[in-house]
Length: 603
Image (cartoon, rainbow, N blue to C red; front, side, top):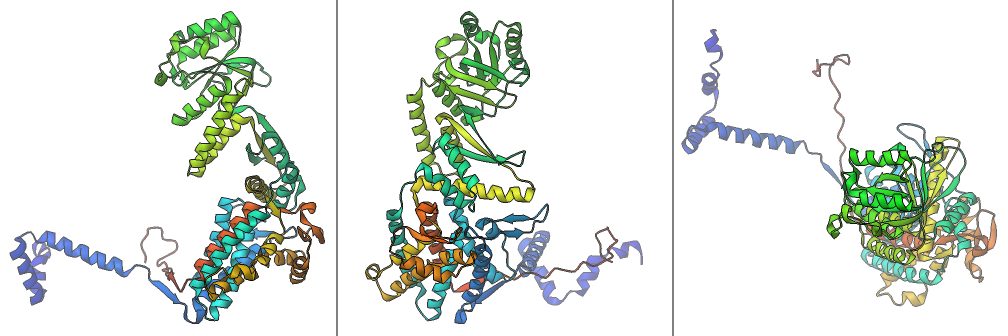
C-alpha cells in the first residue's frame, strides 16, 4: 500500500458505516452546512459526560425496617461512649491514641478521644459522628464537660430507643424531651451559686483530674490578673510547672536598633518616668521631630518614639544622639498591622495620656509640642518584646476604654476577633498571666497540656455562670425534679414519656463515676438519692459520702447547662431519623505492570 492510500481513512470509513449513520451525517450537513466539526465535538462531549456519570460513586440506603438502621447507629454510639467513658471521674483511666507520626498520645480528654474514633461500619460511624457533635459543641461553648456530654447523649439515645422500639411516636417523644431539657436548665440556674475566690482552685483541680497543683496555679493566676484577665498557656523549657505575670501592656515588638540598649548584660533598654511619642505613620526625616527632641534634651526626660516605620536618615539621627549621650531615647515600631495597629496605638495613648499623631485628626509631627507626649511609669524593651507600665493617672479613661472593648467583644462573631479583643482588655487592665507546663516526656506533656486547658476553661466558665456540686450529683438532683406536677404541664402522654427518658438517663453519669472508682454504681445512686441532706453526694476520689461543697467537688454551671442542651439536641436528631444514606466504598483497582517499572505504563 502506498503512503497516500495509507492515510485515506475517511474514504474507507465512509464505505463501512451503516445507512442510518450516513443519513445522520447528511442531515447534519443540511442543517449546519459543512461545519460538522462543531457537531462532532458536541457529540463527543456528551459521550464523555455520560461516561463520567456512570462512574459516580453509588449510595447505599439503609431503611429503619424493624429498627435496623437505628440499632446499627446505636451500636456506634455505644462504642464511642464506652471509649470516652473510661476517662470519667477522678479514678478514670487514660486512652492511648496511635499517631501516624511521632509518639502516641495518652489522653484523658473526652473530645480528643471522640475525634479519633472512626468505625469500620459506615452506619455505626454515622451514629458515632452524631454524638461527637455534642462533645465538640460543648467544648466550643464551655471548654470542658465533653465526656459528660458524650455519656449523656448515649444515655438519652439508649433510653429513647427502648421507647421507640415499643412503637411510640419519636416526634412527640423528642418534643417532651426538649420541654424537659428547658425546664431543667431553669432549675439548674436556681441551684447555682456564685463562685468565690477560695473555690476557684477546687473547680480547676476537679477539671484537671484531681491535680491540685494545677488548680492552685490557675487560682493564683486569676488572683493576680483578675477574673476578666487573660491567662495563657505555653510549654516550659524544664520539667516543672511555672507561673509568671507580665505587668503592664506587653507587645511583640522590640527595639529597631541594638544601639538603644541601656543594659548590655541583659540586652534591654529600660527607662523610668519615660515620655511616649506615638505616630501612626512612617517617620521619613528627623527634621519633623526636631522640636520634640530639643525639648527632651532641655528637660532631660527619656523619650520612646513609636511609629509605623523609620527611614534610615531619621533612625541614624536618633542613634547618633543616643550614643553621644545627649538624648535618652529608644525607637520601636508600632504593634499590629492596618486597622489593628491604629487600635493598639489608641490603647497605648489612653494608658499613658498621649495623643496619637495621624493625618486623620489634622496633626502634623513637625508642628506639635510636648503636649502630645504620654507618660509611663516604666518602659522595658528587649530584642523582641516591649512592656509599658502606666503611671495610674488615666485610670478613669482606661476603665471607659475597657468597657468599650468589652462591648465590641460581645458583638463580635469570630472567635479570633473575640480573642484579640480580650487580649486588649487584659493589656489595659493590668497584665497577662502565663502558665508554663513542664513534663519529663513529650507524651506526658501533651496529656498535661490538655488537662491544664480544660482546667482553665472550667474556671472561666465558673466565673461566668457560677457553680453547682459536681461528681454527677447535680444531674441526679435534676432528675428528681422531673415530678408528676411538671409532667402534667406537657401536652400528651407521649411527651410525658419523653420526660421519663431524661429522668432515667440523668443518673448515668454518677453511676459511671462510681463504676470507674470500683464501686457499684446503682448502690451509690440509690444512697445519694435517698439522702435528705443538702449538697449530699459521693466523693469518688476518697470513697466517702458527704457535703460536696465542703469536699471541694464542684462543677461550673455553664458546663452542666451545655451538656444538657447539646445532649438533648443530638438525641432528638437521632431518634427521629429513619433512613441512613452513605457512600458505597469503591474497591481499590489493582495496579498492573512490573513493580520495578517507573514509566507509568502497565506491561
